[in-house]
Length: 265
Image 1: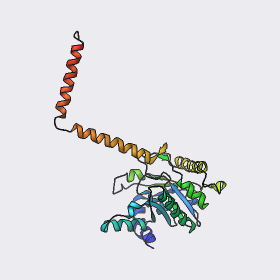
Image 2 (image 1 turned 45 degrees about the vertical axis):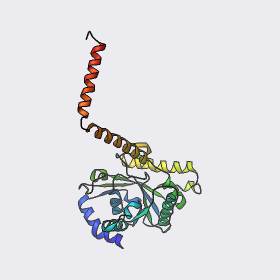
Image 3 (image 1 turned 90 degrees about the vertical axis):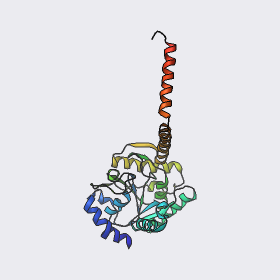
Image 4 (image 1 turned 180 degrees about the horizontal axis):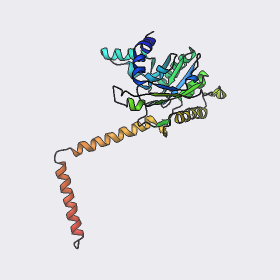
């Protein structure tokens, strides 16, 4: 009930008025029955605009951090995410990954629509990254079609870290459903899972026009974080009192050493 109130009476009308989302491929949305919407992930607002243009209710698998906040703010945040159709999952791997799989399967077995971000996390730089095989596992176990979805412009409207989105048109491009019934009963074959995932990612690349990077987005985020930490240490060291004087003395010593070695210069 809360989902439809937010979609039809609160968030929906405001978002449609301000952002005027355009949609391509709406004819691919099934009128009934379960299906997976596999979308690229550029911004927090992806989870708002995609359900907005789909007439049926859609449930997204979302990280559990959104639901565990403390105090009034935490409870309001959790209520908002549940209201827009988010389902909390633990992304730490292992048994948590199996729990996420079970949660997704329950949604599909109720005949509903499930939204998944195959990259597993938001793109750190607007490019499309290699997908883990979780989406393939769910698709094969549930035996449902997968609709590739490209979100267009959400990273420009609300880049990571920006709380209030910029008012601009948002696009949603929905591709034809992908049928993986040829792999029925092969959901435990890792080569099949990789092939299915790569086919989904190829369609996302084609629909979105994003550059594809053959590494996981989480690995790139770790690399960027390490680089940022090293840079922060360097800046702290550069700002240390007396550092400029030390650098000048080192430069003068090096110059003197050079003159000693090249007396004719």
